Length: 366
Figure 1 (tube, rainbow, N blue to C red):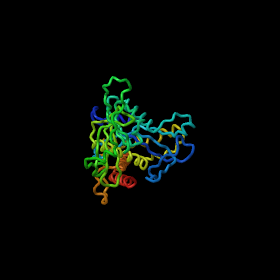
Figure 2 (spheres, rainbow, N blue to C red):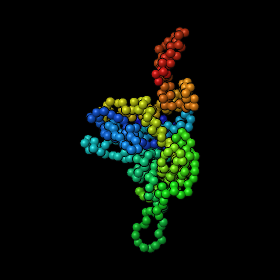
Figure 3 (tube, helix red, strand yellow):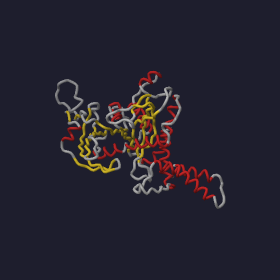
Figure 4 (cartoon, one colour):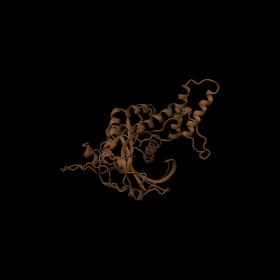
């Protein structure tokens, strides 16, 4: 079903030679009950802070989505989920006699399914540090790249120099040691202003082409960045496309945030956490439908719904010009109610007033 939804997204991705941006992340769906299949204690990012990590009981879903800017949505990025895998903890998998797979392994599995089905296209996945390790980097499909975070003390190396000596021995896999991302920021850096995360971000950044210890054969574009305001700490990123600019790497990684917005809207608007099924088939099938509905609603709004969108009057929010997912959902509900009322075959002078009254009630409820 997810591959069918991706087929509906393809017309929005442009020519076949364009690169398709993907986002991969995991999200927690809180549950109650001991007999629900696949539940366990997982990290809860909403209740955790920098000092204290909080866990919660529920399902952990690994989600793969397509990053794009739908028509009539301005410059806003949306993430349309297409593939899902339920992460089963090691202890639960052993008790149920199931093959245990880590979250990065599940992400690679989905990437191989999608990239293998569309072998003529180029893909580029974006993930946080949990999906930037060697378990993903060394197992990427041939037509898929990766952008992720890097540790500030990561060991970086130059390309190995071919030896001309006739002495025996194994050729070197790594070249000379290069400065770490933290050391890169200690040197001379460029000052740039980037339009990311919905604001103008001024930062110091340094970039170079290097190779990490785990994958010495893959040249990476490494970017170290230090924000000049906002109180955020220094970070480092990498891309498997060495020809990328530092600005392109940071902008691409910032688009990953739309995955977090998708998780929030799917839980708050579509009931991603609410399915009550506890058997294995129900647990694996029911919840992903909410994510697929999210993708279908955004696609519907881009093709048809924007023509019926009536921006609500919000005097306290005059700067808003683009429709949010809540607006898309309200528009879909209004159109569904309108078609239902019109199908009743009402006639007479008061039929229009009935339709207007129904639409007003639906808008207030939405």
